[in-house]
Picture 1 (cartoon, rainbow, N blue to C red):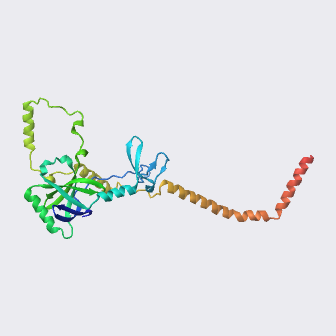
Picture 2: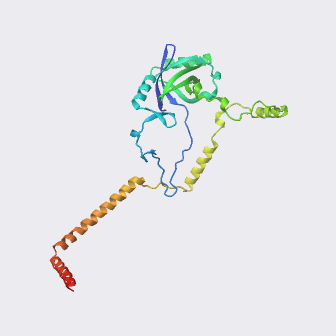
Length: 291
């Protein structure tokens, strides 16, 4: 399992060297875009609309747009300095709280916590303390240059870290449009709704649920593969490179053609009949003038 972060976590004077591993994965089926005519995969370029030309990564700077078309440019050195000042590879548990006190809207991404060398005993201590107390730890961590609020809890005998949103990252629910105010509900309708809820109530079993669309899409893809309904991407150079290649071929062919003609041209220049021809032309012109 790939390590995405390495450092330590502490509570009080107890320090645990740890590694973080991503606990979930996105299984969306990624579809490529092809040119309908020749089935070549479409590529994307970074184009500057002002200069109307492609921009390389080294020619791009980062900036904050504080007003419409008004920017503050931040160079890489400044950003790296801030990153190093804040990216201390240590996580301190600030508080212990109950999990049910945190609304799920705050949860963002989950990471498995594994002990690093020599951290097994302290890891077990924290795990046991969380289980016995029924609490979770609240901590701060910097991952990929972003400071995150996080919780540490036990998941199936493993410590789990879940990054959670800061309060100002959760939008104000009062801004949600068209939410109806409390309305009079007919008791008979409510009783029927409660009866339906009761009939559908069960113990949560995640294995019971699956992504039916993804399954159907993969079945369709496999069916087309089996039926040989496949295509191969055309092996072509990008348009710009192709034009250069064609131009070079044309230039080379022209050069070869010129080389072939050169000996013939030289022979004509040295031929004995050339001066005679020139003299005849001069005499013909004088005769026309005299006439």
